[in-house]
Image (tube, rainbow, N blue to C red; front, side, top):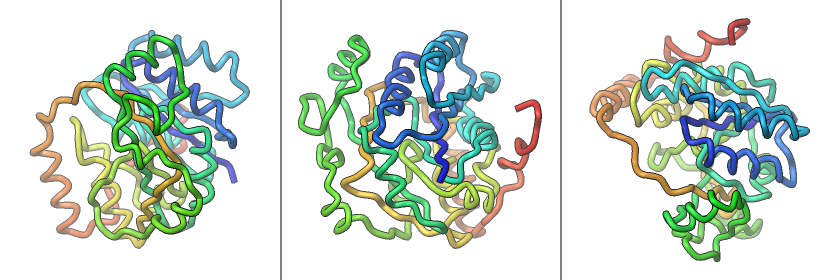
Length: 266
């Protein structure tokens, strides 16, 4: 099964470099890496090109013009360019455990989307990793919060990974599903602009369309580099958009990934 790893980014090339490097040191490599770039400057393109020149795994740079926080549209553009049957999504500030891809594949089921966890890193640990370009991080190291999310155990994963019916804790910084299920609901809603809720709204349509949620525990660890929070100014409008999607039990968005499918301009 071909696997496409989608990495979102915006003007933090130092973090993106670590994220890509961790993806290229997997026990099971992704078949392609697609950078969903929400309008970064040329510095990000230079970092991607430098890594791509030395990597055996294909790396595609999917860029869109900088016109506000448009993560939903950026992901749609990247997924539209993917060739994998299975799509794994992370953010460009995540450093992956070496078994991340293999763990996601082991839990892949048609008709399910998989929500993984994250491990938070302190500002000092993040600064050190960026300076040293170091991707070697484990749950027991200093500067690590919520350590249990970093413990990898097939036995504990089998015991504690469960089907989960609600939207609580939805985060596409560690999220996976079949490409066919993405297309089933027309992907993310491009109308979301500004930080927040585009991932929950996407997950709501998946649930309404009969795609079940599976919470993956003690596997597919991803370490979140510290950064200041994005502005929440768009949250009231995005909350309303999410509420409407939930109340109307939507399974489809009109302005979604279909806009970018089969377009040479991608």
